Image 1: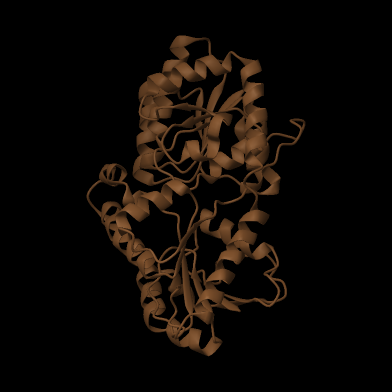
Image 2: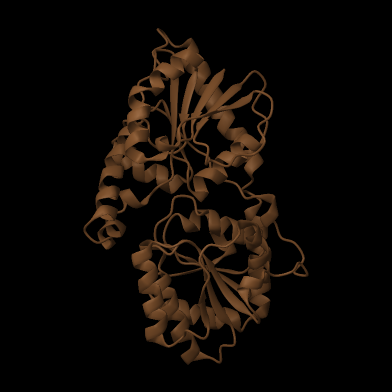
Length: 387
């Protein structure tokens, strides 16, 4: 079986993390893998049976990439004699020859959430999400197999697709070994500062609710003496980042709330392990990798109650309404003053996180692709669809 992975759209953290883990394990015996990428994509050392095919840098630009995938990639697939085209980025616009199966993934929930889409001002951001809704849905409808990373996501898309998906499977992401709980004696990163802190790692984005988190932290200070600081970590959507900073200024908490921006990813495990409490306030997710990483670090978590978070956190985390700063403030006050409950939550979170392992994710992914290929190979006429 020869699998061609189109990684041209995997430019950001989540997509690159997925590919690095997928390719960090040896493919099944008898499987060849070709990875189509741009030179900027960072991948692990590729083992036997895996090769990288770099395309020109402009192929990373959305319009050029889509044109290349539509008009040039079909010829490359014929040249490579590909059995499976795998598009983990979610867009699948490439016509394939009969007998070549197609696989895509669904990871971007925002285009399918009208509440979150409406939060973006008129302009590029809102238009992009509107276009993505149609492109992603069309890609999933045309694929022979759609890999979902949560049951919630599959249910949302199946309702939109009206039963027209050919085949689907739910395979959640895993957690890197570096995040598994370790002794707190490990040095804490300098960027977290001194003293106890509450940590929220996520991009500063409309649906991540950092403004509400800042308001909750300001309210917390009226409920109890609060020596802890709030540390916000993540890349920014600039208009929303400006709103977060303005809220910090307005609430008068600039002395206890730090916005750190992007940090070295390798420093996050220690940052989680030294946090007194970890927050995850997102209102819209597909598979919340950050939640899984914090759980694996064995830290007590206060988490958004929006789906799919309870699907992953179960009873190992406590939940709050991300639209209610009052709710979050009250729950922070309670947990910060209960070391016994924080210790119990940390233990429960670490135990539950063991359900999510990259080795299992990769194994199940290759099994699903192999089963699809076998079905296509034996189906009448071999037309590239599953029975």
